[in-house]
Length: 338
Image 1 (cartoon, rainbow, N blue to C red):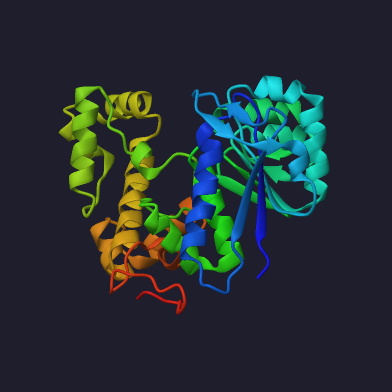
Image 2: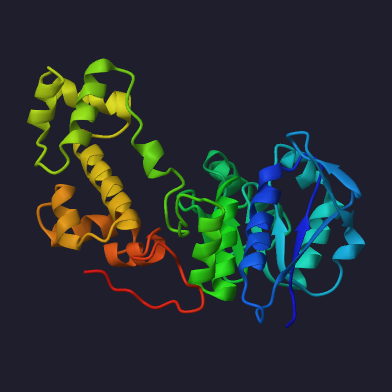
């Protein structure tokens, strides 16, 4: 069976995890592949071969750029703290554009999307990058539609990811496209990832979203919310827990947390629902009740509005357990939870 050639272009100051995260996914998938499946062949190339120093000081071995000639299945371009120097390297940008023309698909991690845009590859397309640099990218490349929200964006043959660890999510999506969802999920499990995220998820995780405020009354209110999600949570009741008037509580809560109490409650309900969908076989009615949505219909509407997926779709993609605790990649079947 023919190999799937993955060519990673490396330059001085690139971020090590942007490089190693995706290639560890491809290498792990190779070890889990069925014997007849096409494995990935990973080639690292660089104008600075044979050793290229990354931004963290870790050096990676690479072959000269000319070793990257010929047909490419996936061209991968990392980001890094030295991105400014890379963008001024016209030979590097030109090589990326030329290599992309020989590639079935082109992927970038973090600021690597700047290099794709600099080569003119993203004009008229939708792309993402690290949230901290999305405005700069939109300003520099007005012909690119920059979406700062998703962890990765797939537009035609181009896949751009948000940054650092999202390169792993993107690589899992590429494995899924090549070999199916079961192998991608098994690869994620073998790498001990918490879950396999789809591209439409926000760059900020549910865990980060749920961080508690420093201000003691607001922290007390947040903790009470977390303990009582299964109940209705009117703002007046939450404010009483903080020993504050409703008006003052709403003002201080927004200042400390960055959102209104009502929005925070809904977001926290969704985060808890995601956890239950990923780790249990509870029915939609049971999850709706435990998370305080009142009715399954309300739960489904809120969940879909927030994540762009129905709860059933989310569970099918991201549930990390099965009745046996194992995933059989050779006999994957569609499951429709209650």
